[in-house]
Image (cartoon, rainbow, N blue to C red; front, side, top):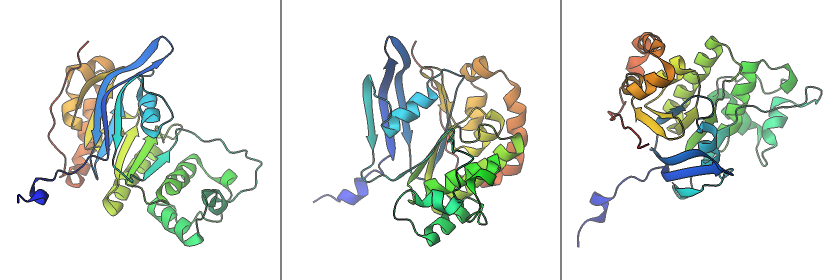
Length: 258
């Protein structure tokens, strides 16, 4: 009898095949393929209206696909960090209480998640007192409580300044290193987020190009959308962080059919 274990392939956490999304007569995504493997950080970039958020919504089941298939690994645990979350500033609610709204969550779990998000001292703070950066870290901690296999981030640093965004994405790298969870994130902050990624997927209604940050930054399709200015910032950021990315995979640039 042949050995089944020797031929068994690792299953992708998420596999998107030939996905199209339409809102009435408007096609926002067409023929999109995407995979996320265990432990990797994948970033989706693209101009406004390119379908980035629609793709993420389809993955979590909040948007209906017009065509294509989305497959998730059985039992997949997903942590989600939204683009924004409004809490009435007059509402008296502590960070701990906010995190325990998820259900049966004890204080130890809240404390552990806040430590993983890099804000261990916020447990008793009022949500209304938090800075923008602290608020996003609490949302990250809330997403980590369930010990997810993958984190989904939808422009989670919108509204933060450049240093706050850089610190947040470095924390994401730390979370991946310490927990082994994969990350699929959307961002418009190309100079920071591309260097925190193993793979980058550039969307503009379809997949324009994909690969490692360096491959995508030099791709003609990417430069046609964003220009060449990101390359310098990418190189400077990588200079200090290359040692943290020795596991980057080679990838080829692909051009989507029109």
